[in-house]
Length: 166
Image 1 (cartoon, one colour):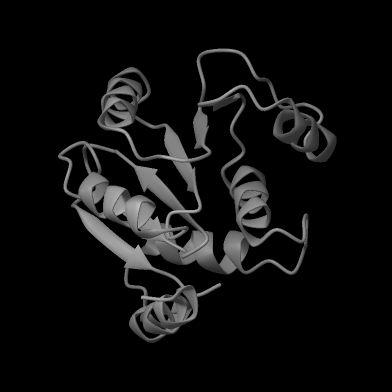
Image 2 (cartoon, rainbow, N blue to C red):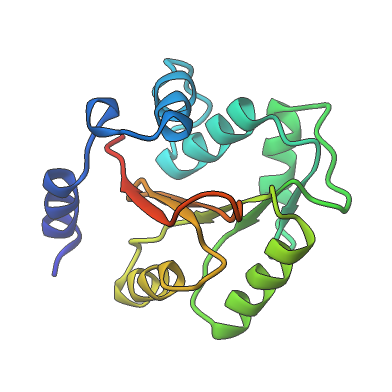
């Protein structure tokens, strides 16, 4: 399926703040995701920065050494740390089962942590990986924003998956 058709399908399946019944997700969407501030022309990077602004992690980690992304993040959030333990993890491209194990380990170490996945609908492989990841027991709440995805693993929350229009 072409990216345009895939995006249109997503658009019709997804919701905005009016279709959300979770107070946690509703607050994030209305006060964080839909904030007017633009950090970047890249929709995925803009979403990532809005997540940092809203959730206020003390430290952010990256799955790959990406000095350009780290510098852009540091420019936007100078007080942010890039040392362990990480409150939030950024995954650039995810397609390997070994990455699921790393995410599972992170969820055990940081039960209130957050994972941001870039470009979850970039191609068929990344879309299949995202769908496989959603089936994992440690994933409690996920937000599919087409350009990126968020994963939360709070054990007290019921398993829910959201598709949010950006």
